[in-house]
Length: 306
Image 1 (spheres, rainbow, N blue to C red):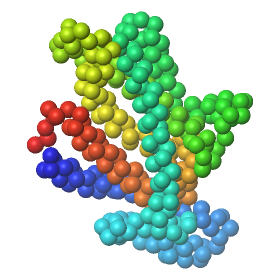
Image 2 (cartoon, rainbow, N blue to C red; image 1 turned 180 degrees about the vertical axis):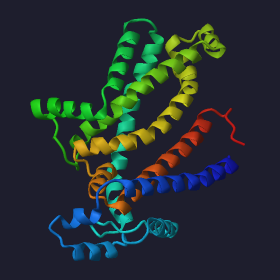
Image 3 (cartoon, rainbow, N blue to C red; image 1 turned 90 degrees about the horizontal axis):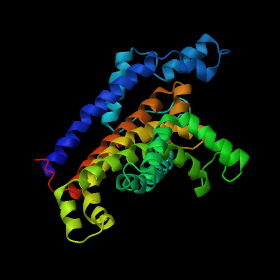
Image 4 (cartoon, rainbow, N blue to C red; image 1 turned 180 degrees about the horizontal axis):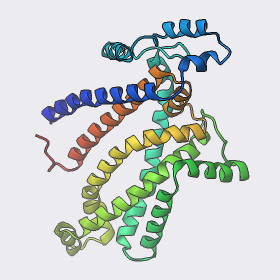
């Protein structure tokens, strides 16, 4: 296990390097000059050139790339063009909000998917199974940028039950978390159903029912734990989708997280801040995937990584 952990940590470096390189090139190829965005069209050429030298944008792109890599190796992600604050400080101020939203969204998906998936497996071919499948397909068909405004119109504008946007209370968290969690819950529901059905066909579950255990007890005490291993794997892989989906969701609900910060940085062509946000999201995804592999090994001792 220790050697596997070291190998996975070593794989983080080429992943981070690839993310940094791709994002750096893409953000510099996008149309739009950050200097003109910051100063406006009324600025004279001398002012633009002075600001461009101050931001070190007058240097060749390869030189800028080398300087950025050198800074990252020292833990320096640069300074935001817009706020003139260190990028790490900007991200650290927004990271707790994104972490709260992502964790709550995962909790919503688990709370919805686990009972529905088990119920659908135990009622295979019946009304509960058919309704579960229909709800999952419907949820997967509605993207976040449509589901979020729909929830706002119903629960905030029409019913007045929840705030339209903001941050600070549990009521502000409900709509963004549900928007992010429902899509993942639909995928997990079908996964739970499929894995539980597969486990129910195995001999150890049949033997448990033959010993006098009820079908519910056989599922709860025997089949469910083994069925959770692929579910946990999918859940970990979906964490990256949650972080990427938070970009749209945080913008819709004015949630002060990294996703909204990333959108603001892209609009302002704030190169260091865009690169820092994407790199943090990529590293978080790698870390969660590693934690998922270790958790799966705990759930199923038969798994070996040596």
